[in-house]
Amino acid sequence: MSKKVLINAITVENGNLIPLLLKSREWQKNNVEVTIFANIYLKKRIDKLGIIKGYKFIELKNDKRFFTKLQFVIEAARRNIIALSYIKKLLANRFDVVYSISSVTDLTILPLVLKLIDKRIKWAIVFDNIVPLHDPGPKLIRLLGWTFFHLSTVIIRKADVVYAISDDLKNYLISHGINNKKVIVTGNAIESDVIKKVNRNNEFEYDAIYVGRINETKGIYEMLEVLKILVNKYDKFTLGIVGEGDKHTMDNFKLRIGKMNLRKNVKFLGYLDGTNKFRALKKAKTFWFLSFSEHESFGVALLEAASSGLPCFSYRLKPLVKIYKHSEVHMSPIHDYEDIAKNVLATFATGNFNNENGTRLLNKYSWDYVAQKERRAFSV
Figure 1 (cartoon, rainbow, N blue to C red):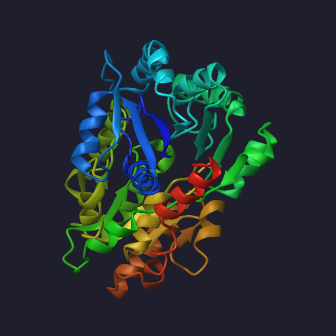
Figure 2: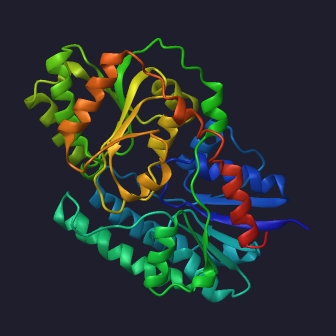
């Protein structure tokens, strides 16, 4: 008899869907019926990606688009109110598991209510990062994010199983009142199958590339300082940027680029996923990841770049040191962007833009493996 899983995705249409879809595909292979609860825009993205077939879909109607962080907070609250009107319909489907793809508050309220009404339902949730209070950014948005994060750590105590992507996050959960027996360390993964399909033939379009959110804690401004140093040596040096950010951050970032006379050296590639992302990645000579947040939990984009064979440069963050034990990534002291630039220049001096140690990581991190651990944990 198949098991039925409801995935609560009512606010994630702009996020990276690949991990969720790869896990869902693996569950389907093991006789799991997958239903996704989200708006129609997300369904269109899922169908365009073509990773999973035969899933069921419940549409959240009357949603609105958002373009800033504050708009997102308001819309997320609104969508949850709308979602609660679907409770009767959702309960009628007799789902065995409700799955939260993240521990953010906007994805935990509905599962909590379903769990409280029907105790037969198992609630599984992914915990993949900590939200700090004092990172850079608008103070109101930072305070709201921090407040909702701590609210969610209280809410998820009602979950049956919490998937932490690292031992550090597991220890954090336990120290904040989550039952040790509920927390399963699943690790994280990369799109290894897609990486293998895209060749890197040394026909480079970018001297460096960044993939991720356009956010201050990701070191975007220090990345420009590195770029400025490189441009002094190579005036046509090009940095490709894959990703998006809220309007306020994007406007400020582009303003800074203009003030530093780097417009001709920065190329915005927008949000890319799947094959398109790795095609852009493999057209670059190097990869930069200058996040300085104390709560950086894994750095998937960095692992993808190293596994794709790019020389990679980052700050020496505790979680990264645990992953890259064989010089797969060139690491510098946090905020020492001059050391980053020195290491990049040293690589360009050699003319060798291959990362053989990094490519050995390719088969170590599989979403199928993560999916299997998650499925076993919620007994599907």
